[in-house]
Amino acid sequence: MSVAGLKKQFYKASQMVSEKVGGAEGTKLDEDFKDLERKADVTSKAVVEVISKTSEYLQPNPASRAKLSMLNTMSKIRGQVKSPGYPQAEGLLGECMVKYGRDLGDETNFGGALVDAGETMKRLAEVKDSLDIDVKQNFIDPLQGLYDKDIREIQHHLKKLEGRRLDYDYKKKRQGKIPDEEVKQALEKFHESKEVAEISMYNLLETDQIEQVSQLSSLVESQLQYHRQAVQILDELSEKLKERISEAQTRPRREYIPKPKPVFDFPEPDQSNGGFTPSVAPPPSRNSDPYLQFGQVSTRKPRPPSEQPCCKALYDFEPENEGELGFHEGDIITLTNQIDENWYEGMLRGQSGFFPLNYVEVVVPLTH
Image 1: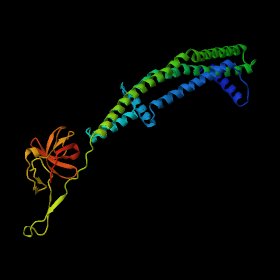
Image 2 (image 1 turned 120 degrees about the horizontal axis):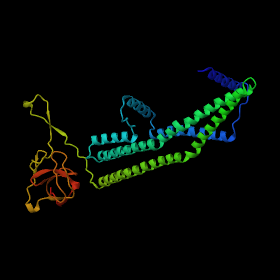
Image 3 (image 1 turned 180 degrees about the vertical axis):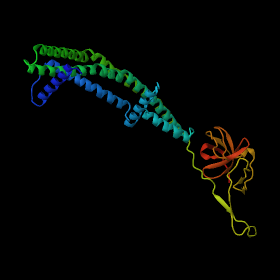
Image 4 (image 1 turned 30 degrees about the vertical axis):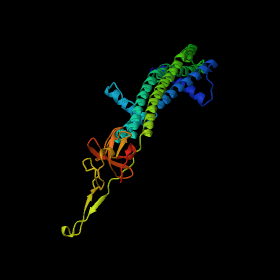
């Protein structure tokens, strides 16, 4: 730094100390300038705070936000073009729902509903990603550009103005010791800086107002678009779930049928040392004799075909366990036995098996 520069720094420091400590008064700026300065300062704080809060609105999880910032920095260092995206809460919820829905199986009502809801949540996450991109491009980035260019320029001009004011006040109070020409130059530089700062603040507060309001309008439009798409997606899911509820309510409820309990055969004494071997009574099978039930011979005599007990299927029945007899609505099934108060045994198209009572209507009843 030159000698003149060192002297100027000394003058400014001395004047600042005399004002802060000694209570000396400096040159006052006019009220219009102070009002511009106040509004420019509020605008600066507003831009910084709004950018911060908008980022929190788009990415509310601080831990994920910090991790994303670190990953973006690493991507720039590595020269990667595409940066990793923010993990949307809707996407995480959707992945969880889809995982457990598929574990349960699409054939179950709850499992299928979870998959539907999970896929919808993932679509919402994609729409939220679009909102992030739109808001960043049309709102955050323009505001950041305003702060980096115009507001920082104003801050620079105001800092320079304050330095020239201190220099002028120091020289003005020592007029006589300091040449008048030097005092005059200090005053001219002070007025020059004041005018430059005033013009830059005026431009920020007046000329750029339309642009800033337009940016705010872009934020609202992006939000509207997001919520419209979200409502449409959720409406579709709501209709799907209502259909599932309606279908489940009209479907006959299947009763729980316990498996046959094990029975124990006690062998003759000469065949064993007193122990026993368990055996399980077999369930009715397709190939079993219709006059046999749990290993016992039925005493009923076969009826003529015209009097053969039978029933009509009211609904489709898909067998899920071995030994069950499948049929379609309207089929006429020959009845061979009633296993208990919930299940019949019968024959259809050469196949034998058992099926629930509430799926059929008896045409010719069984006789005991």
